Length: 484
Image (cartoon, rainbow, N blue to C red; front, side, top):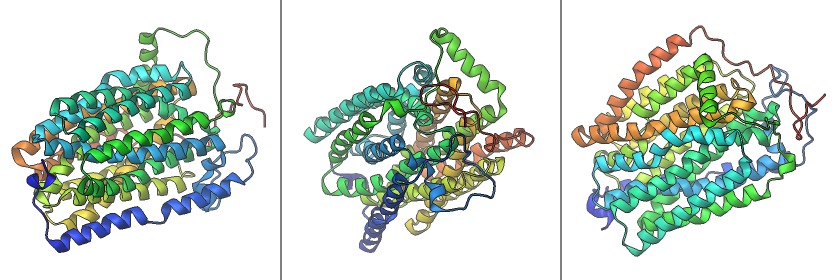
């Protein structure tokens, strides 16, 4: 079936404007500027051992500050490999809900796809965290990305040959979700091995930048490829894009990793999980940010379920418009993550978490009230910016609240809460949208999540946030203490 059967075509003027917006999203000169910055850092000198990345007002707000982690060759290889793969991942993320609609799927079935895609994270991400603390993270990432490549290739063949059915989508979404549930906590913990401790905050922010840069480019390209070639083309591009991350991981020099020498004997899996849970529960700067992340993710971040419905039914746009509005949200997220990269010398205070959350929820509520593409685009840009400030600051706060030997397990809780809440949220959003429409689902979710924000803000009012100016004694690459 064609996408036109399920959506109302916009006026010619609107279509022209949307195509121009999509082209602007993909042609912005930011990638060229990043490439130039990387070249500069490839020639720069390494800072003295033990030098802190946070030095009050002594560091200038220069380009070097925002891209400090790029000085490290392993991180550069990882970053470029990730961004190539993530463009394909976002193209598939746009294509999958549109395929469900083309197959005649209901809003509830859209929610089910999200449940199959993210549900495994509720159960397997904690095990992935235990794995991250015990095995070679680089090898583990190579294996799970190879599995994901096979899944994307199978999806491409089924869609390209026209034999794909809803149950195929459910099954392959579950396979992708299982691979992702293992990959995400390992990847979160692996970033800490690519750079010394003084550049960890910047590395986290730049990893988010690659995620959001691809979030701009991927959906913008996806809208065009769906309209020109069909939804199947995005699955094929995603399959090929996994070569980027696999090559990047293969080229990483294991001898240059900043690894903590772990114990030879490990506790049982159950005891390891309990240790991570006990630490998170006893640490307010881990517990309450996770509560806020889980509440807002489940109730107000159901964009993969609601945006295709909202774009088609409320805004009257086709696949090109859907890709453009997704890219606009990614553009806002990119601004937020770049801003955070330059604010790495600031302590992740409660204001950035709660303030970003409040702005995000206000804009998400407002999105449910608009019916014009011209009003929707600036709102979704603001949603992307505010949500990224909140989510990334939560990530940085947790990363700087956890010791290295627990990092994989605690970050697996971050993944479980963030991705694992999506199935619950997807079913909630899909059910509300089927009964009352996608706009109402946006506003209702934002209103309910506001209660979570109020509770967390109250509990964090007297909590001391992690002090990034106090850097732990760094480890050398062979695991021994490094003496400055």
